Length: 388
Image (cartoon, rainbow, N blue to C red; front, side, top):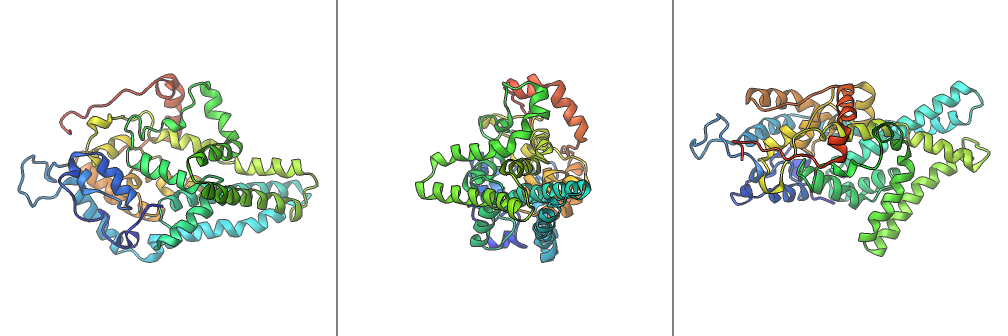
């Protein structure tokens, strides 16, 4: 797991410390800053002065440093409830919804049974999407041991995916190299052999089966001990739900219990795939050799969706309406991303930087109409002339 400094976990510096002049020349520094747990690397930030001058005094701030200071002030003024408590209470609420969901699934009344399916699916979505995402960033605990525990619980037991592979793919690749072709270009979500209608509306329903199979493939690169431990945790999560459906909900057949599990686990798989595609694919992509500075990379390559009560609850603000904020400050909780949203949006607009937003259906239409260009063929490289 990534190491998150104590001061950044709670109310410390969002920029993680002093910057290095040498790292300013290399995009790899951004990867290292994320791997070590810092939310922002001054070394990977833009060298233009905050006032827009190219050659100002040495003491003037960079754009990213100035924005980081504004966010730092907001974080320091926030209580524990704002920094972590709100999101932890949502996850706890999802866990508390599981007992009544199992009981409702045992009802012979169609309305109660349907309510049980919906409650189970929503709770599972909160735990496996919001919970797993926050746990992968180490946002749920102030200690490394706590962060490791929650990562194993939410990623492996609840989501059936190895925690190390999740951190490697999401933190060390996607966040460190956002929209960099061949590294963090979201190509993991592309399946060029599938027609657009199948990919967007049918294939995601198979995620409950596909995810454990992908997990087994990921374990080939790890030690036998870690692989066996991960398989044990994944099996524990899967069998616990299966056993409770048989013994608490009263399902008479194993096939019925398994079918119920698949329906509940696939309930949010369509928007899950859509959101991961919408917020990066179709936006500027960059070459690893000519990557822009961090603030330009994130403002051009990340997009926010409008607020949606259901998706905000199940996915979390950082995956829906605060995705730009999340990529700029990835170790903040969902609620803190929402809190700093006015600060980030007003700052970027004042500096005439992009603050990209679009509607869910609009992005769906773009991906559907340009499916061959965006999801099948390699994306074109964007050059930010003047920003290099």
